Length: 463
Image: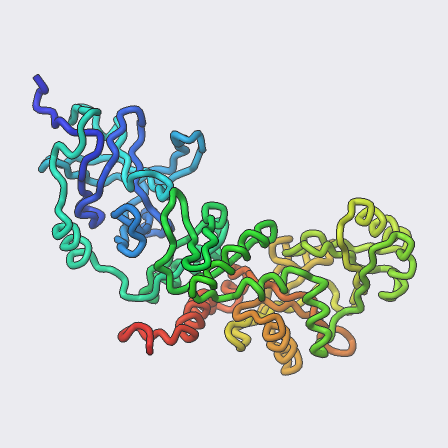
């Protein structure tokens, strides 16, 4: 006797009508306690003082173009350990499950299941008292035909008619990344977060490919927005370069990102264009330390690691003795450093100019925290609105153009003789500048991408 319980196989089709998923293939696993639904671009928002989750689902395995946008109240946030042993903090929703004309409410955790065999995992908590599983069988309740799947996901479900955009980065929860995903969605595009570490490439002269989590081929993207953190520069640029080889548009090219990340090379390129920078020295031998210090005007001076960013690896040496010790210590570690003059009159302030497609979209003055000389917002600096001079605007635009960047954050300080260029950042943060300017900088980035691709919302891409 089965006491009225549904007998199901190890794989079945089910639906979630409340979140607009008419059918999805589920792996039935009584060994797993928690059920999990494949979800990407997960963000949260408040509705009537209740926390909701917004997320996208690719309901069909190995189909990255079919997308269902879902929203549901957040029931919980729970740490879940996967079968591979990885622990992850996930949002939990409650929604109605429909299977074999039976419906009941279940809890679902939201997670990216691209590396798994199925978009849905039904655990024993959701099955309790409702089903009996025949592990030797599959699809005991039937399968949808190809025509029915097409009907479900090409007529009933509204698909974005916009561009297919990949955000190539490392942290989906970072403010800048969340804002870019939101901006892309608001403009009608299908934008997906692609974790750099989960991408890998196939080198083939006839058909180069980028693969993602479990073998999915990323061959249907119109554009890639690379936002590569410093310690992933080599691999992230290799991926970006490969997308370029596949004919995919990239908002910043691998070549331009590589140039911007090499502080010495970028400074050499910039001064060759006549751009003003603080006097800077570079040497290899510890025997040259005294000459290096004198070259930049003596102490106090700045010592910078070539691979540092966001103010990390930047140290102020206030005396000559401190400078000698610091430079020699870095050299003994075989670290490549720059020695740069300290611009006292800047008083711990610099200007960040945000450039998109040859225009300064917004600027802010960054002021260092008390006792700190670095003005980076990440290091406790504060920001305020600032009006830049025509000369500062010219420096920002020429610096961005010289490195070949379409999107950049250009850092400038005000010296006694005019603006001095500090650095050009190929993945500038959005949080500080959006908050201060009240501008939709992420939206401007998407608009810049649309312009380069000659995209119009009604007619798609122009010929």
